[in-house]
Structure formats: C-alpha cells, structure tokens
Length: 630
Ligand code: SAT
Ligand code: MN
Image (tube, rainbow, N blue to C red; front, side):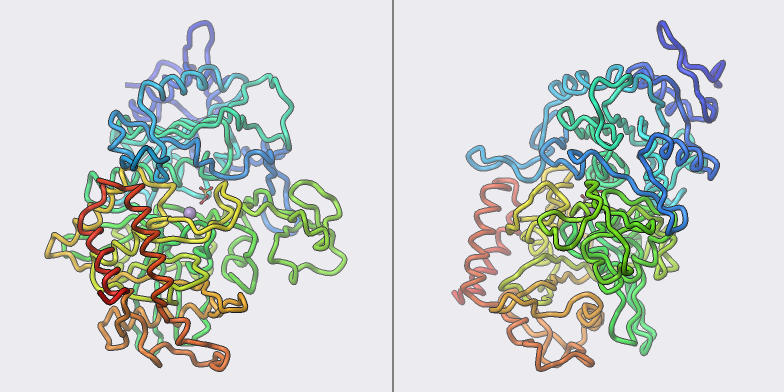
C-alpha cells in the first residue's frame, strides 16, 4: 500500500520529503521513518538512494556549511575538523540495554566495576532516550540511510536503516557501507536493524559550535537495544559513535545475532596469503586491539619476494562454518576507517595508494599545497610546504612538539575498492575459507613473536587472556597493559562468559574443521628498549610459518605457553641475522609468565567470575602447571 503523498503529516505541521520517495520504502521501514520523524521533528526528510548525484549534493551542502573542506592536492578528497570534544568513541557512555543484566555482562566479584560492557535496564534507558530525542532534529534534515553490512543480497549480510541529521554521517556511511536503493530492493519485507542517530543540536542553535561541528558531548549516549533490534545514538558525529553500521551493528548487535544464529562477529582483519613458489593460497583472520597495526597487517607489503598478501578487510569479520565444516568469513564493511598517524609509504604503502581519491579525512593536519599531514609523514613533505595543525595552529612545526599536528585518533575514511591489493574474492557472497585465527597484542616483554595453541580450547583461552598496551583509539591516554579479550572488550554485545561458551561450542560439531589458533607479538623489546623484530612487511615471515603449520609441517616445538617455530624454520633471508636475537624473541621466561598467570587469574575471577566456562579455568590451571613445572 502506497502513502497518499510524499508529505508526512505530523500534528500541527507537515514534514516534506525533499529527496527520494517514501512510497518506495517497504512498509516497515516507512513506519520506522514516520514514527521517528514524529518524535524528532526534522524540517525535511531525505531518503538516500546512494547515487552520485546525491553524493554531489551532500558534498555541496557540507562545503557550504564549512564542515568539509576540499583538499586540492587530491581527487575528490575532503577534510573535516571536529569539535575537539568529539574525537573518539566514548566507551563509558556506550550501553547495552536488556531486561536481564546478566544477558549483557558477567556478575563481577564484590561489585567491581565491569570492564566488559555497560548495562542499563530498559526503563532507565527509555527515560534517557526520552530526555534527548523529542524535537532533536528541529530545523534539520533527517536522512534515511538503508545500508547493507556485507555484499548486497549475500546470505551472510545484514541490513540496517539509519536515520540521522548529519550529512557528514551520510557521506561517511556511503564509503563504509553499501547504501541506497539496491539495499531497499534486497530488503523487501525482511527484518532490519533500526538505527537512530542525532547530533543533538536542533536549530536555531543555543550555543556556539566549534569548527561548525554539531555535537553535544555532555548529553552523549550510544544505546543498543538488542531485544528491539535497535540502536540509538545521540550527541556525537564521530566514528564509532555515529557510523552505526560499524562497531554498533557489525560488532555489538552482530555478536548477539551470531550467538543466536550460530556464527561469529569478530573484531578481525581478513587477509589472503599466497606462496607464489608453491602456488598455495590461504586466508587468515587476526584480532588486535584498535590502532595496534591491524590496518597495516591487513594491507601488508611482504618483504619475502615469493609471498603475496591480499586484503579482504581491515577491521571486522563475520564468520560461519559452512555445511562442509569449513569456516568462512565475509568483511561486512565497504571501506576503511583507519587511524591516520603512523600511516606512511614506509609503514603502509598500500593504504597511502588507497587514500589519494574519494576520501574523507577527519582531524588530520593540512598542508599549504592542499594536502594532508600527520605524525609519521615527516619525511614525505616537500620543502617549503607549511603545515596547519588539526587545531588550526597555522605554522605548526615538528619542533613545537608538545602539540601534535594531527589528532592521535585522526582518520581516513576511504573506499575498499581503491586498495591496490584488494583480494579478488573480497565480495564473494559465501565468504573466503579461513584456515588460521591469529590473536595479537602490543607486548613489550615476555610474549614470544609467535606461538600456536595446542588445540581449539587452548586457542579460545589465548583469545580470552589477551592483553595489550592501550592505544589512542579510545579515551584511555596513558600506556598501560589492558586486558582486551579477543580485542572485543568495548564491543561485546552479550555476556563475555556466554561468548566464550559460544566459541567453545564449535568444537562439539565433529564436522567442523577447526582452524589452528595462534598468538603473535610484533612489539617485544630488548633490554635497551628497542624493538627486537623489524615488523611491518617482515611479519610475512611469521605468516609463512603459520601457512606451514596449517599443513601440519613439522616446524613447531613446544613451550609451556604454546608451540613456537623450531630454530631455522622461520625464513629470515635478507635480514641481518646478527641483529636478531631469535632465541630471546621466542623465549617464555617463567617469572614473567607466573606474573601473567596471576594477572589472568585476577581478571577472570573479578570480571568473569561465575560466568567463566570451567574449561577456560582448566586451561589457565594447565598453563600454570606447565610454567611452574608442577
Ligand atoms: O571510531 S571507531 O569505533 O570507528 C574506530 C575505533 O575507535 O576503533
Ligand atoms: Mn577496530
């Protein structure tokens, strides 16, 4: 049934659809739009079709409103500078609301603050949302973004519809997800995740904006309502707070759907690796905490000439065992939202080649020749070019070192299709076959370059006990070792104990070919505080070894912690072997591991408590007896 006109009737006013046609939306989507238009009271509605014409219009508006600035050095590239108070995800205001607290988070010991998610009961949540959303879009346009996480029409994909009053969010969602009419067609009368987002600044403004960037950090909330299949986000326009397909749908809601439907939504890159000598090709996934070099690894330029790496995704993997028992993964995203600082031709040449067109940069520094700058690009700036920092310091120089040029969490938002090493199967609807799962972290001491788990259960334990030096992507500033199980700490959609049980359950089906599980650490330091391993493109040497282990080649030897490469089994050709202390790099000092085991005991006991599966506790005890030899 079609609506009578393209004008939405709301008591005492009417809201005009200025772009698109309400009549083309499935009935359920139309009701969702109407209900929230009535609540948020935008002036106008724009239904996104995903066309070029639409994008031109959005970019025109964003430029006119001084939110985006064209970067003349590149093709169709843009710079946004945010309110300095809106620069990252805000974990402490990110909630999951369910009737039962225990569905969302474990019962911590002695009322300790839960580090594995924030829960709120539905009544309080309703109050919080009612304090914010009524009339919040006054004077603004409400955009309707139908989007697909995963290739449009793939049986592994999920559809969301995001309502937002931010054109910047639309332009970014257009890069990061597949949006528009083709998604509406694929949706039909099927289910979708309802996503509501507002910057929280109705017009006319009552405060002065910084950088014309509307946001309301004091009222910020990111709420997940899995029982209603809904996400509501208020007060921020930035990254994971506002692009609701990414962390909110693809990880938090995704992990809940995966639990329910028998699959996994993980914070993992997906890469292909080919040995051109043996013509063998494999796919692997890897989980690292944010800004730990994950995007660099996903796009690695290998230093071994016979190894070829291809990229399927740099942040999120949705995985499922198929009916033959093969684990398969899709990348639900359509672009890269990568941390800019540290990205250079030296560290990630393929990313550098990806971002010189059709890219939105946020909070990087700009150069007087219309380009961009951030920490790590010092050697790539032509002489005489001036740098303007993200905060607007006009003549920023590397000597004014107390202030960085770019914000440490500044980003590029760029289409995956532009990556020069994109895997040919990256959009394959059935997903790519996964033969190894890699966990990793930034561990300055004690943790070997690579070790392999003894079995699936031990591998799940390794994921559960991951720790890493904290990074700039979240609001944590100081460098401390943080527990970050599965690199999912801020992204679990449901009780972490249940999540572990879900991972363990895949071993119960004898048909499943369980991939081998590994842990890597590119960041071990020697006594002088220097990195012991060259990292970056040389990490392909470790992946080549992993490939050998997939085939069960006899190249591993046991340590109490896991199996490490036998001496001589890592290809070190072309490296200065005098400089490398492989023995120390692979060592597992018992005093270090005794401390580590104590930290894991404490963490499991306090944070997971009764929800910890007994087999994971048994893995910890087994590790302890192997380490202490008792
Ligand atoms: O801002 S995002 O959540 O998209 C990226 C991150 O913080 O990990
Ligand atoms: Mn991430």
